[in-house]
Image 1 (cartoon, rainbow, N blue to C red):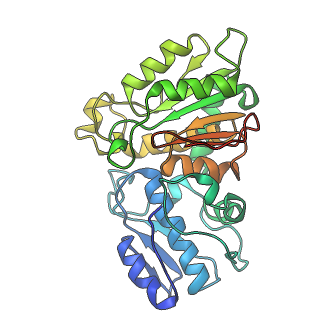
Image 2 (tube, rainbow, N blue to C red):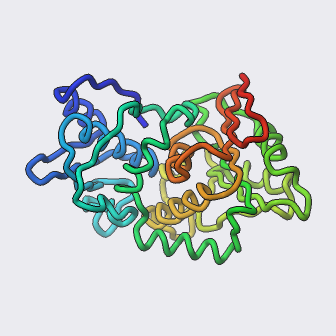
Length: 302
C-alpha cells in the first residue's frame, strides 16, 4: 500500500493519478495501470476503492487492470482484473467504515484494521474460478491440511531496498516457537519465498516436514521475480499471468493455515486481509521487531 493523505474529494483525482489509476464516473469504472508486484497492484487498487467509496461514490465500482505486468501476453493492454478476482459482487451501496488507514505496506499489519477491511475485500477481491481451481489443485497435490500446517513466508531478492534484512535464522527461531519444533510428527511447514537460496536453507534446516509449492518459482537473483528479464527462459516457459494465478492461490492457502511467521510487505498485508485478521501470525520487521499474535507470547519487542 502507498502512504498518502486525503482530506476531501478534491484530493482523490490527484492521488489516483499518483497511483496510475483513473475513475470514470460515467461508467463507474476504476482503471488501474500500476506496474509492479502482483499484491502491490492489488493494494493500490484497494486504496483507490477506499478513497472513491469514502469521498466520491457509494455505488459499486467496476475494476479494470490495464497495461499490467500480469496481463495475458496475447492482450497486454487488455483488462486482466477478472482473471484473478470476481470483482464487485451485488448491487448494494458500499460503505467504508471510519478508522480505515490508507497506505503503508512495510509496517506491522496489526495497524491495518483487517476486520474493518474484510467486507470490502470480500466484495471486490474474492478469487476467480481459475484461481479457486489452482488453489484446490495445490491442496490436493501437496495434501495440505491448513489446521496442521505452519507457514514461513520470507521475502528475499530486493526487499532489502525497502526494509533492513533480518537473518533467516531469526525466522527459523520464531518458527520453532510457534510450531513446537521440527519433529517428525510435528506440523508440516510450508515455505514460501522468492529467494531460492533462502528456500534451500530453510528446507534443509527444517527437514522432512518442510515443503514448498513448485508452481510458485524462486530465483537466485537479487531482483523481484516479476521483474526478471527473459522470464520464460528462466522459469521453464511459465508466463507471468500463470505465475500470478498460482501465487494468489498459494497466498489464499497460507492465509488459512494455523500459524504463520512472515515479514512485511504487500504479500503479508494480503495474507492478513484474506485471513480477516492477525490471529495466529508472528510478523518480523526490521532489526528486529516482533509482532506476535499467535497467543503463545503476546509480548511485542524491538
